[in-house]
Length: 433
Image (cartoon, rainbow, N blue to C red; front, side, top):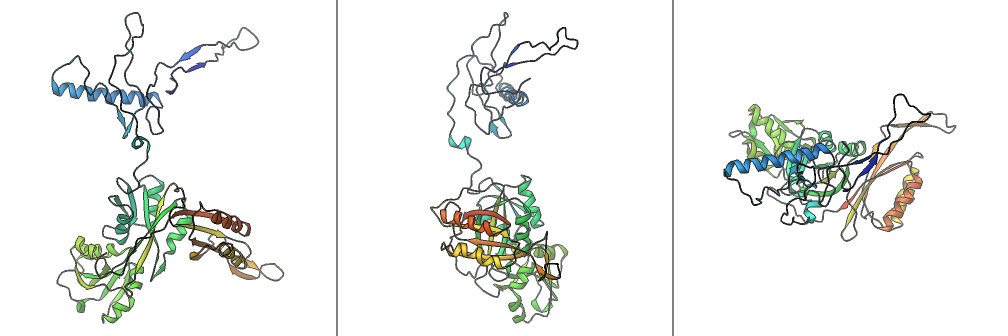
């Protein structure tokens, strides 16, 4: 059966080739084929009903609803009930097919369907994707419940369904495989610097940066109930958290070893699960509440202005705008060494575009370049990829012209995303953010 079309009169022709033709050429018989199914409702992109299987599924779902309602009521009515014109739903989408079959009499003459109440017109909610404010969105983050990344996901998308991932790359894959709609991952901290792993993953995967969120970080020293600081011999946490609290731990006079784990909340969970009474964790106050730990020291970060910047990743980019401050992230490489970097940066300076970050990472495909005066390959130079963030939207002509000039000097250029800047005001907090 041909796939269901939204055109009511669908004509096609079959070419029939005989096994033993009587003529020199195959016989062409113009046989009109008409689709007996039709669609009277307005089609839309997310509609279900592009094949006969979808049509039959819709009919089965509709019939089951009608049968269940008739069985509950125990009465049959000649008038139209709400189930007679109930729109079937498949995978959460309303079907665009007219499920009222045309009855046939004994002479196979089609009879017009009975008159029904007018259908409700389609609205923008029927055509729009999932809401962007966070409702019903599945957001992947690295860590376990109580991690700072979970708090950043909640700030970026309120009321979202947070999906914990054990590794950064798993969060990338969760979005690519449609397990999650978004991912919120850290890229830099005001004290610890850049999270290089995520910069490498941004280049390896094809996700787009659609936003950013800055989260003040408030570290606490956590241990099991009844444990005192004098009994501690070890402190575990994420490497960034350990570096952000290095001076404070020394000032507390703790004679402890420092061990790195995957995330801050995971360290708290590990202590609670294994009942470690000689080990403390550096994590948030929320992690202490979730895993039943006590706060031995509050606000142990070396700097009260401790902020982590997270980026929001999606499968598709957003449309850049000019009615609010935007930031654009790019990555590029060049084959002529660092001498080209000045030309690239001048393209932004000439157009008065401010750079907010520049990060260099080794070129994994070609980490070393061999050259010398005779160009025979004796001296060794490192090859780099450069990540740059600048304050401009790709909808602005100056940003487009700047990238056009950058492309002339580079061998590789990719726009990671053009997205709204996080303009939320914040101040150093002494409590849990």
